[in-house]
Length: 395
Image 1 (cartoon, rainbow, N blue to C red):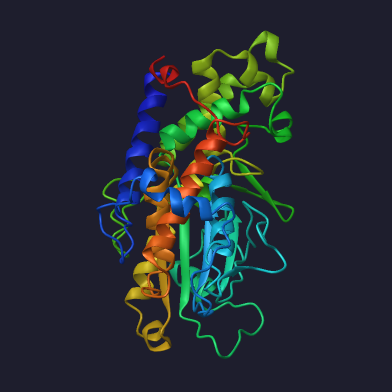
Image 2: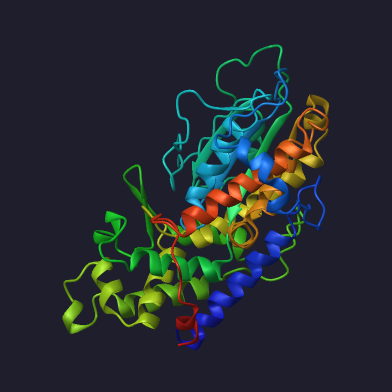
């Protein structure tokens, strides 16, 4: 990777990591929860060959909606696992997947109504919703309204609606870029869209109209944003840097004699590693259409959630309604390094109001069972877990 490109990616990575570190949920501490060693947990693990173990016959209502969001290479399998665990491992709470959509994204990813500038997210108290790569380009006021006021059907009147918990699965853009390159530079390709994707397309096609992807993501990322205390001291990416990445992409795609008629996948397979990484990362940065642009989309959404969170905290209207917006930003890198500890952080965020109703021992057992299944998947044949080669970053 050339030095100019690496510098841009490093700056974006540091900016996003800084944003991530500022979003510690209000009910958690910086110190990770401690867990007993697996040897002490063998008795509990033997009970959890399936997750649906209940230590409490009482069904406790769950008074918030839960939304779990991921992006390409930030934890698709993790998103599914976490939603399944909430649905199956804690039957004493009335928190369940939506009946109609289950583990599927209800709304088309990377799309939004042009008039709204945000994806439609219709939530319901007591329900788990998953959504992959949503567009969130609207104002904090509109985003808060979507997350807290727009509800599907009529909730059970016996269940209060206290707002929404968002679990935002993110990743350091540096490791996200490397994982993306290695994932798609496999033969056969695990996803067929790389056979058709134009990685350098910067227009955003929707509803028969074209707009520039930069016009959607740069307002939140290229300016100082102190109004909602988003802690952006410097722009995450500027228009000049965006255009530089697009130009570099064009210099790599269909410019070599042997690749003039080649598709995106064939470029990844035939370019040397540094050039292949540059092309794949450009697609993850500036190609907003279809399956691209998730590095900047993720960064944009971190900012937007922070803005909406601050607005709700300072809103007399939402305070009088008794509604909260709680956003928990979880890094896939942390989950990979310490699965059970970060599973416990996740459970503590979701079930912060259930002290005494869900035992600590039960949460610990489920967390360790998750870690066991993660390591089995890691050493198995999961297409979504790739082993990168960090050495290419030094090229």
